Length: 69
Image (cartoon, rainbow, N blue to C red; front, side, top):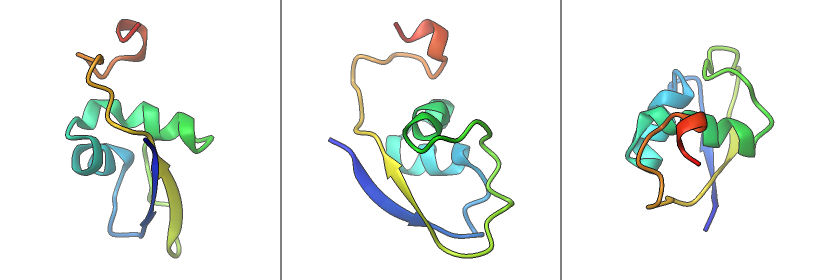
């Protein structure tokens, strides 16, 4: 189940967000896909931005998209 959170300039990258929200920072790409992003860098943030966070997928054993299938 997905949820929406608000990130700010203090959230340096999607690596940090994925580590906190998915307990696996290598799965940053799942958050990026859910939000139409291609780069884990969040330094462009100038204010609060909502992000959709996909639900934890226990079938994923790696953060690499090509190895996750």
